[in-house]
Image (cartoon, rainbow, N blue to C red; front, side):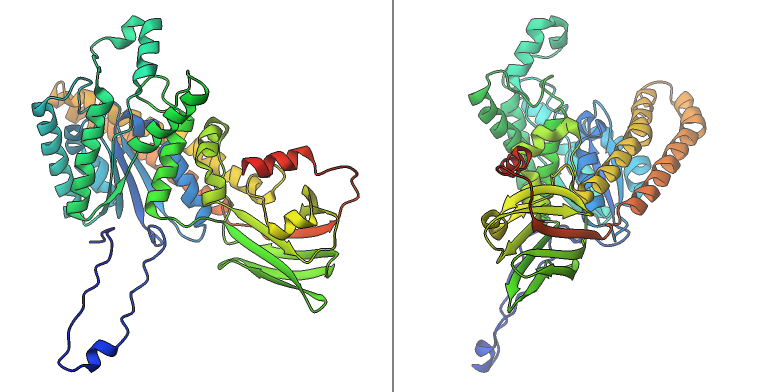
Amino acid sequence: MRRFILPLLVLTFGVTSLAFSQPIKATPKPAGLGLQDGDRVIFIGDSITHQCLYTQYVEDFFYTRYPKLRIHFRNAGVSGDRAADALNRFDDDIASFKPTVATILLGMNDGAYQDFLPEIFKAYERDMTALLDRLDALKVSVFLMSPTMFDHQAFEQMVAKDPARGKNKNPANYNAVLAYFGKWGQEVARKRGYGFIDMYGPLNKLTTEGRAKDPSFTLIADAIHPGGDGQFVMAYSMIDAFGEPGGAWNLMATTDGGTWKVTTSAGSKTTVTGGEAGKSLTLTLQPKCLPWAVLDEAKIGATLTAAGHRKSGEVLTINGLLPGRYDVLEDSQIVGTWDHITLGKKIELQADPESVTLHQAQQVIALNKKRNDEAIRPLRDLYGKRKGMLRGDKAAFETWWNGEGKTKEVQLLKKAEAMEDEIYKINQPAEVKLEVRPSSAPGPVKAKTAAKRKAA
């Protein structure tokens, strides 16, 4: 069973002093999750997972970062779920997927939206432990996630406008209750050798910082369900906790004896095709991957986390240019104008509106959004209906689930699979022609270029 824990160094003592003189070489830990072709990642959760947002953004990262790997994803979130509900659908919804990696985001509903009560927590502890035991039996790598925050200020404002929204909820100290649940999960993760992802801390921190500038700022307008920006913060927290390396590609060109010497990061390839040392450069770049593109609904979240800079940088450095201003082009399209000093330090192109790699990545995430909107979320709605029918007449449930329900599930899974096939066709990075040439445009660096550098 794979476990995401710090490696332990074990020293074996020999019978001669020679044993002590031998260098001990640590086995390098694979970067990130170390996913392999065919791995299957499942997201287990409640309505926050059912929203198909943070899960979608994580999928977007892996679709663009690892185009040569065929990785499969399943959203297994159901609105209103507690740990006991995940157990009730375990065989049909979780085990049947045969996951190799599982993330678990539960607890928001388990605390019952009231002050801490030992008996409520004991039920959560019992059911979560049973769920984890069943995952262990599948030999799956597990990441426990702390519950997200409960935004008390947003709740108070919402109820002031519509008192009915606060019905059956008295969450005077609920954010503290969720903190307790999360720290319990962190300790369980340590003991079991799981990974742990803090969802509570980043959302609270960014909300506090946001309110220092705008008292009405929130990432969770209804107090419970993060919007697109909050969900992107969650996705970034996951990618960061997985240890996924930053950067899509890093290319450096330097003048060397009257010629250009070009190097690029591992996995990408480049060939110089023209130019004059110190004055201009033309080359082809075959990037290993695409940048992590972001939907409009999540752009604030991407800015708050600096996700593009930290996890998706497309970095270009040109040393040795003569003093002046230079246009940088991708496939004959100007993406920006910089002076020789800035180009000698570095520029980042991952968020440039004219970037051809960004355009390709945007096609990938647009198709994945369609996949989630038209297949994945309806599938989660189906499982929501399944949960409701399980609470009623058992015979009626069996008839529906083994007939109409199962037929619908198969149809949605096939639709999602077909869209996944298309994603793995359009996510293959195309070769890019890069050109650096003296700029003929008068005046300072283009305002849009300066703004983009500031936002990176």
